[in-house]
Image (cartoon, rainbow, N blue to C red; front, side, top):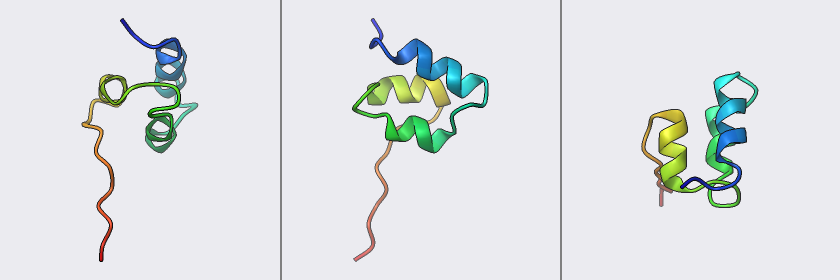
Length: 51
């Protein structure tokens, strides 16, 4: 079962209204990391900070 925002975020991304970065920013507020992967087709990984 998807979160309540999944369908909307996927539609916005598929129509080009949202970028991959915008979808990334929606985790975990609107969608889950697994849903991010389903929407953009790439693993959800946090950026590595350089020391």
